[in-house]
Image (cartoon, rainbow, N blue to C red; front, side, top):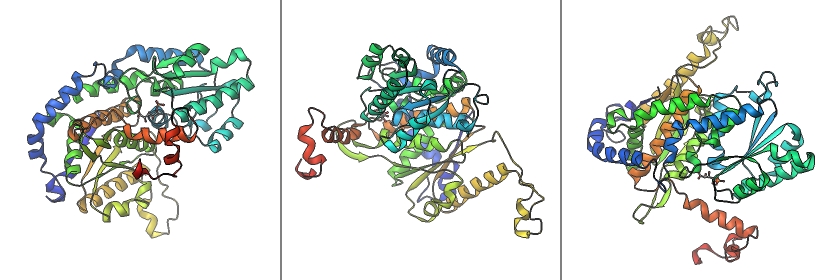
Length: 466
Ligand code: PA5
């Protein structure tokens, strides 16, 4: 199972100025955390509580429905295009990148066992979309249009382009077979459009917000279509969930992680660096960045006071960022908390040959060593340097990157985020700060009802007078 090592945040390791007395902190906050964890789990079925994502791991109907659909179209599509943004795409991308062959799209149809290549369109940039459409064969392409709200301009515009492309290239009666909509059961524009056109649909369940939706059809359908075991992910979540429900702080890694992040935030460590040491987990950094930023960055607390709170997540990947950001991490301001993710063993290993440049003494130390040993040494040495520089850091370790442990990693971070939100006394499930720019976009694009905002959106009127 996934493990959290927090020894390098302790005052013993990094001194009292930057570190915590862990035992004392756990003892002081045990009661509070007990209440928070119990309240979060007590709301898992409550309407309006936005915590129904806690149930997704147990939803065998969901697993069966995505698997059935995937089975029914197996071999039919060579390419799958996912249209979505934010919580409707980042989790799915992180998932496929971690659990499929790293060069999946370059494999032959036989090597992919008839499962589709995948492309994520999450930007309204024609330079991304047009070349993709030039390349794809409409007869062999499936679009998944994913939007919880069913209204998001970025997703809906891409969907309109996709639909027009299918209309142009396929017989009218065939088009609907190439579109799957994943959206709210009732709200938004996408649901009635999908129903009227007869598309295959899946729900983003009530009280599951975008950034907590990776284990709904949002992430599980792309996974099933590419042959990833949905049941294994659910098994991983359920087994971990039994641990995360524990109200004893000493036994609950999500509560420990949240408390440590919170206490260090209070001590002006306002930046949360997330750094997996794994090529396959690199995109988990992007998913975590959104989860942490959009959930915890808030203007108001739960009582309506203006607090402007929230740690700033920074994405990094080991070892690559050792040659980019680690200089700053080690010697810049001591204002960061680091979360490393380590993988017990890679699926593949390589041995550095011992018959190359044998006369070059300075390369001999590499001779005959496994790449995994070098990776491990680079991780441990970077972590040691961060600790030597008195910077608090934690490590999440998964034994290997597979469906079971990958799901545990993301689920633990989701629960940690919910607990951190409660500690910060904010609502981690809303995102009012995203709304203003959306409204300005509507104004600039001429949507009815937003005319008053045009002068500010255009920069013709100063925001201080608004
Ligand atoms: O986490 C969130 O709620 C957001 O990032 C949304 O996922 C994002 O804004 C896209 O919204 P929607 O899924 O409604 O299109």
